[in-house]
Length: 550
Image (tube, rainbow, N blue to C red; front, side, top):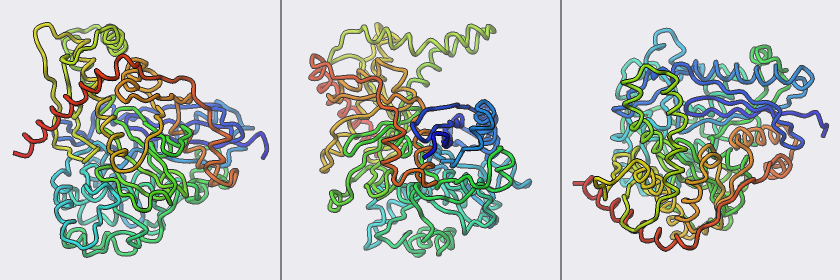
C-alpha cells in the first residue's frame, strides 16, 4: 500500500455534518471540516412540543459538498488525487419518503416546505401510536417478527414513522414510492442513483430498525404490513429484499457529477452506509463483549460478540441484534438512551432562561452558555454523596432501552429549599449513569457478559466528572478513545475496506485506530452508596411507569 493513500469519513449528526480526511495507512487525521445545518439551526420544520423533528435534505446536500471540498482544499491537490474511498454514517432511524427515482419528496417543488416530505429524524416521536399498534399487531402471528429488535418496536424506527407519515398526509401518500434511511440515501446520491429499486440498503439500518432478518428471508411478509394498515401495501414486495449489504461493501463509485463537484475522480469508491454509533464503535476500536458507548445528545451502546456464541440468545428490550451490523461476521447488539447530553442541555437552557430573555448582551449570553455545564460539573464534583440526596430519572425524551417506551417522563425528587443548581445537576448526571447501568444489567441478566466500557463522543471526551460518576455507578472501568471523530473515523475504516485497501474491517481497525488517551476506574468508597442510590432510581422509575399505565 502506498503511503499516499487517503479515505474520507463523513459523519452526519443531529446538528451538523463533519467530514474527516484520513491517511488510510496509519489513521492520521489530515483535515476536518464541520457544517452546521442552517435550516435546522433556525428550528425550521420542528415542533418540539409534539416531538416533531424533521430535517430538510438540502441541509445534508449542502453540508456534504461543503465539508468534503473544504477538507480537500486545505490539503492540496496531491492528496486529493489519492483519495480512494468515501464512507458515510448518519443518525438513525432517520428515513425519508422518496419517489421512484429515489429523490426525497422535499426536493420536489410542491413539497419543498412540507415537513412530512423531509427526513424524520431519529428523535422524532410523532409515531408513538403507530409503534404501539405494531407491538400489539405482532402478537397475532405465529412467527415473532420482533424477536431480533428486542421484542418491542419503537416510535423512533422505520415502519412506525412511515405509517404515521402516510396516515397524516394524503399528498405524501399519493407520491411516496418508498421510504429510505438517511444512511442509505447519501451513498445512492453520491453514486448517481436514478432508480430507487437499485438503492443498496444497509444491513445495520434494515436489521435494527426495519425488521429485516436473514432468518425471515428478508422483511416480514406483505401480509404482516397490510393487515396492520392497508396503506402499507406495496412497501415490501421485492424492492429491497435481496439488496441488503454490510458496510464493508461498495455502494458504487462516485458519479461524474459528484466527482466534478468535489474535485475527485469517478474511481473513488463509496461504501454502503450505516448508523453513526455502529461505525463509531469501529472507529473506537470495539472489542468483543466490551460495551462501546457513543455519548452525545443521546447514547447509542454497541456490543459485538461472535455469532456462534449468540445462537441461542435473544436479548429482550434492546434495539436489536443483527449479524454484520457492526463488524461482518460478528453479531452486533444495540441499546441506548433517548437523552443523555440532551438532559444536561435541558438544565443549562433552564438556568439560562433569564439571561437569554431579559438581557440584550449577546456576549454575556454566549459566555454563560459556554461555561455553565463545566461550572456545574466542577461544583457537583465537590459535593458529598448521601443516599438521600436529590434523585432524578432521566426519561426527558422517553426511554429507548431497556424496554422502549417513549411516553415515559422524567422526574426529580427529594427537593427542598436548600436544593441548588449543582445539587440538581449532580442528580441529573447520576440519573443518566443509572440509565446506562440498567442497559448493562439487561445484557448481563440475559447471558451477555460486559467485560469493559469504551467511551466515545463529545461527553466522553469533555466531561471528566460525568465519566467518573459513570465508572463509580457501573463499578467498571471506562476507557476513552483518543479520537474525537470516532464515527467519521469508523466510516473511513469501512471506506478503506470497501475499496480493497484492507481485507477486513478488523485489519482496518488495527492499522488506522488511534488508541485510548484516558481511563476512569471506579472509586471503591462510592460504589456501595451508588448501589443504594441505583435501587432508589429503579423504585422511582417503576412508580413513574405504573402511573403512566393507569
